[in-house]
Each structure stands twice: as C-alpha cells, then as structure tokens.
Image (cartoon, rainbow, N blue to C red; front, side, top):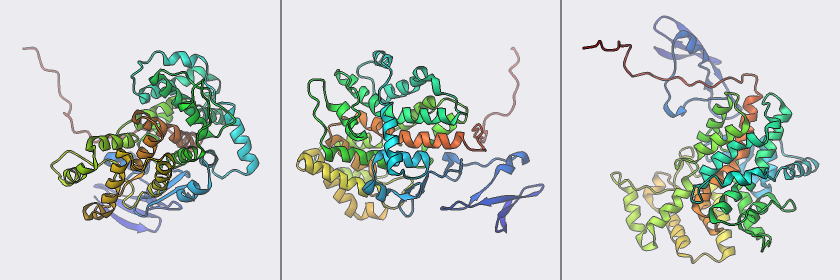
Length: 431
C-alpha cells in the first residue's frame, strides 16, 4: 500500500487490489485535509489513537495554530477580544458568527437576563448530594437534570428551540455554579441580580449573603470576565468532541453539555489549574523550588510541574500572556504580592521562563498556571476551578453542538477500532 500525489485536488492511495483517489480539502486556515470517507467501502479504516491526525468535523467557530501560538474566535484574535470585548459579546460572536451591533447586544443581554433564575425545585435537587461532594459531580448531575425542568424546548430540529436551550444554558450556568459553592459551605443560595454584569453577578452569587450584598470590586469582576473569555472555546478538544459525539445521537442539549462537563473534569483537561494549585501546595515554600525543579527534570521521577507547556501550543500559549497580566492586576489590587503561596508561584514562573531546560523544551507557563493563581486570589476554592471552566466553556460547547446539529452532513458518530483480541473460537466442550 502506498500514497502519492495525483493531482492538486487529491492523492492516489494504492491498495493491494486497486488504486483509489482520496480528495484533498482545504480550509481557510491550517493544513489541507485528506478526505478518507471512501476507504470504508473498500474495507479499510485508518488508525489514529487520540485522533491527533483526524479532522472529525468541519467548523467555522475557532482556529488554533499551536506552532505559532494563535487562537482565533470566528477569525478574531483572542488578544483583541480580551482587551476590547466582554464575555457576553464574545458569547454572541461564538453563537451567531459575528460581533453584535449595539442594539443586537442589548437585546441579547436582556434576553439572557430573563433566564438567569433556575426552577425552584432545583433547590431541592441539591439536597440529594452530600455536602462534601465535588462540585463537578454536582454540576454533571444538575445540568443533565435541566432537561427534566425545561422540556418545552428540546426539539433539536427546531432552530428556535436550539436558540432557547443555548440561552438558558449560558444564563443559568453562573447561577448553578454559585449554588454548588454555597451548598458546599452551607450558606444560603443567592439569587441572580439582573442589574449586574455577567461576571459581576457570578461573583455576587458566590460571595454575597442575604445579610450583606455589596457589589463586587470592578477590577476583580473584569478579571473574572477575562477568564471567561479566555476559556470560552478551544476548538475540538476532548470535552467539545464529547459534546459533539453525544449530540450526534440526537441527545438533548442539556445531556450533551453534562457529558462535556464530565469530560472536562479530568486533570489532563479542565482540571489542570486545580492540579497546578495542588502542586504549589505540595512544593510549599520558595526554598523548596530547586528540589522540585530537579524532580521535574528527572525522567524517572513521577513528579510533574503542572501548568507548564501545552499539548496544542508548541510555542507560548496566547491566553497565558493575557492571563499573566490579569493575575498581576488581581494580586496588586488585593495586596497579595507578599502572600507566601503567590510569591512561590511567581518565583516558579521566573525560573521556568529563564531556565535553559524549560526554555529549550518550550515549557512556558500556560493559561492554567495563571488562572489557578488568579482564582485562588479571588477566594475561590480549588474544587471550584473546573466548575468555572465549565461555566465559561458552555458557550463554546453549545455553539459547536448547534453548528453540528444544523449541518447538512449531520450524522451519528461512530469511531472504528483495530481489533487485536481473539479470533472466533468455540465454547469448550464439557469434559
């Protein structure tokens, strides 16, 4: 079997008994893609563990160039959006393809505010969980259960139903996330305040109480809004692919987003910033950094520096630079530059940016490193970090789900396998 270029629009694949042509497809950015749909009828599949060389779909939402450190939402660089936009404007962009006009944004924000409350019976639903349950376990259950409360708009073939479900999810996620935290600490749930911005309202629901309802610090609210923007989408990652695969079955959007939350929970994906803070606590003190740097360099040592390097970005993570600035703004605003944990983090950052070992391997601090430090400075417990990631990523997930469901080639996902088990064998005869 061999492959050679045939024409500019395809390649020839020589199989044992025949030669077939595989078309090449080109996107607006990125490498050309070899269309292999015609292989299956010939009795062949491709083998690609982790799907690292496989385009599972066509999408117009997000583009990543890991070698160049580029991240685009609908063509707009993440750096520009983080500087000039806010999360709900970015949410509109991801969902609808273009930045909103002033009237369009006003209407969008107003509509979202109509959906920020959750059904009162969901309050009772929380009582079924242990107080010490991980917030992500609660989120998987509660978000999946939304379909039992909002079943009036679950026809995935109806564009209006899809729009309503998307708006409900984006609007209710901060409410549910804050409820997870309040439940874990035994404090009353706080209702959303529709006179506040999206991030501001989330911080209010997290930290205000019925006896004290001061508005959050605007600098901290802006930092949270930026965290939401940076985590809103990241192309066909594990959780987004999970949402798409679940959605390919025709499952309702709440179930699909719940599946995405479950996939995000893993420490290799959304749990990385929680793992980063746990690592800082393990190191414990600036005086121990040298010891742990040596452990990280030792291939035989299981210790790994969390929050450094990225599977996709082989250069500097473009989100990390923005998050670094935000992190320092928050530490300065809260007067935490001399806090032992944050001094440790900044010392570790300095070494990683200057040490030849880390620089040569391009193990730069990534967005998880800075977001973990920032969230901790905001007073958010580490168990809530991935919940906040899920809150932000919901808009990306539902945008991909909607794109897939409305696509003309929408079909059930069915990956293949390379079977290496026993061939057919007979049940043993009785002795």
